[in-house]
Length: 342
Ligand code: TRP
Image 1 (cartoon, rainbow, N blue to C red):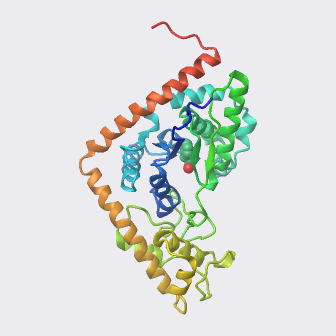
Image 2 (image 1 turned 30 degrees about the vertical axis):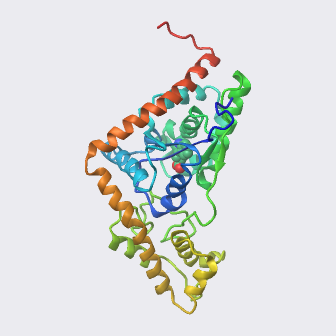
Image 3 (image 1 turned 120 degrees about the horizontal axis):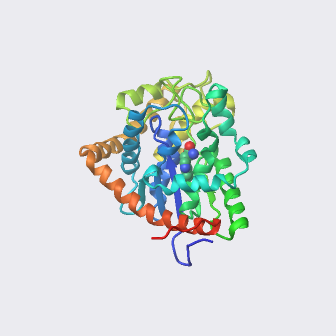
């Protein structure tokens, strides 16, 4: 049962793991959209640190990245007075609901998840963690605790969202209407930026194979420029939007340019008519640097005093906890747990 009554704004929830470095792709495909949409929805944005421990990681880096990702949310335009920004592990209901949902989630559903298959294939069979398999149940808990109506996620998370819907439906069927069934909110095409070194794979913040894979939001201007100038293209010379896989590199640069300048495709093709790939790369590099400038300035302002972000996250957790603990209470009752005397 949704707790949204008529006239109330719909709810969205999304999150990013505090692993790797946030990229230009994360900005164009996620953070920028969240910031734009936050006025139309009641929004919850969390830093999903509990998800980040499902693969080997460094505890010091986890703590640092958790603050960094939260500060980058704000630097990219998420307003903590408008949206609730918090850290997943600060709200213990996430871990608790995961366990409760584990009880009704068939193992077969988890074994089918393609992300699990891909990620576990990269590790030794015996060292793959239980957490990696259970990752989608934790994600379902994140979403269902807030009765989210919509979840902005990339194409790669669609299967996890379908699983979330299946778990919610199963729960509602077994124990009575409790959870809102969330819809995915997949960003428009052109919002999916591909790797600069390999334009057939999505730009990833945790890809460490090549130094020239992604522009990070905190890259200094010269690094950012250099990465764009090194982007893989092809041996042709025509600068046109194209779905030809052979021309994916140039197309990716054009889509990035389109996303950053908000010009029409005709205008962009016109602008580069008769020009070379070098000219395109220079223009994209400058557009990227122009985009990064204000974000990095805000990031510096926000992190000058380290207690600022921590205080803000404490307030966010309090607000998130109000919503999450109400849902959890209902879940416990419906599932038949004895309430402790108070
Ligand atoms: N699994 C998501 C990703 O890798 C991150 C995530 C965790 C998430 N919990 C979420 C996204 C809840 C949306 C809603 O992108």
